[in-house]
Length: 209
Image 1 (cartoon, helix red, strand yellow):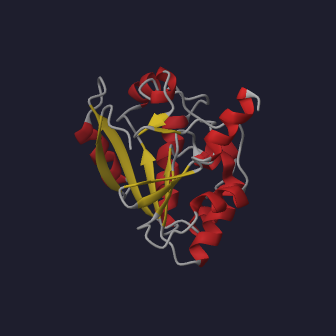
Image 2 (image 1 turned 120 degrees about the horizontal axis):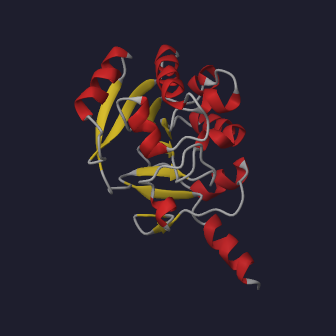
């Protein structure tokens, strides 16, 4: 069997992985940001010793098969080291199926889906997603751009607008920022979350998963 085929099959085994009583779904390797602190830009696609590198975009039926028995999962989390909303049709299909089974669904995202897709996708997400955790990562645009290195202009404001819209759609929204990144003011980040009427959570640098 060719090496490339063996690698692809190995990666398919990690479309779903379990941590902290939750089932995490890894549905894309693409990302909107190029965060300097992200493991994949430092040569590693591993989270808690789980290899999350994908060689292609999985389909909904593959993701559902990878989940298997989810009866003991506290919630289902779309996460991975890519940006889940870049594979939006699969995200929505999988979440719709799981929601019909009574599962709680959370999305971990950079909050740039509306910017990337050119439309407000929060109403679609709200139909199947209960909670959204958004990587805010900085209190101002200059610091955000330095650390997150977005591919599109206007990302910092677009992320905040997404958070506001997601909250208005009824999803439980939490902004997060990493304590330990140079120049990041955690208290200022929390104040922005307050102005947007969403939750806030402090993360710790180099702690992934």
